[in-house]
Length: 294
Figure 1 (tube, one colour):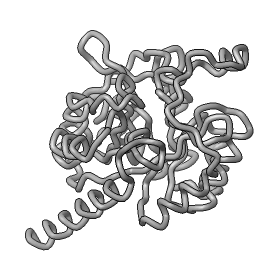
Figure 2: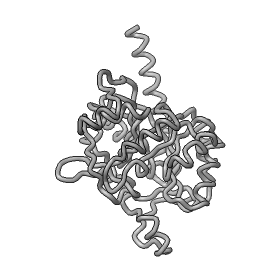
Figure 3: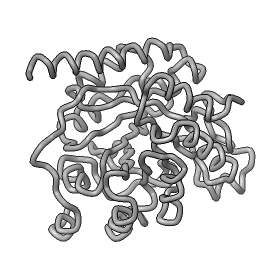
Figure 4: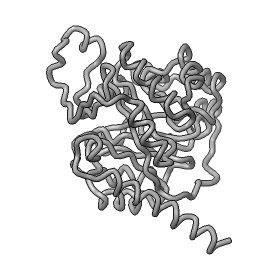
């Protein structure tokens, strides 16, 4: 990154937060319904409007259960920091997102079409944080002024930067616009250090494996665990408890994990109850470690 960018964005690389890996739940919403979709099959919204059949969209799971059902499930499980993602800007999806936020005030983050015009509304509706990607990118470049405006509006402590990425030529590039457009921003130590001063957390989907249950991208997880100076959540490819352990090991216990299509509550084979038990064990082990080192 340029010296100019480093001047604009506060560096925060002196220390790295040491914390236990934890499970972060999700609620993905498309056309007003809770779904699990292969992320790389999402088309641009304009294309979706022209092709109402949405040929090529790969849906792993769809339910008539309301978004509030899943929000309450996570609340009753004492899970915080999950994310609600709107995979489209239609009104039905917005209503479903608001319903989830109001069912679990302060327990969920929200992303998908977040801008200066609506960020405060989502926070007032109960979101703990807003998640942004495409708004702070234009034609593949990070728009520092837009990012700074969001920080000024909501505060860095309530902002999550989505750095979901795909691999190209041996490096991970942030992808925007429903993960269809490669940006010029490479996910590496310098990028994470520079952007950490402008947000509370990073959310990173490994788009090449997202929704496919093909196993996690351990190389990406290792990069995040080694390089991120602030909390970071990885999503993509988890299919078993062994994969949770792989993320924990590859990320050195510093990378949180989202599981979607693999969960039985979303039509998969991995029991939600077992993932929750794994999460609680991580929290208990962390408390024990703190007591030992105190």
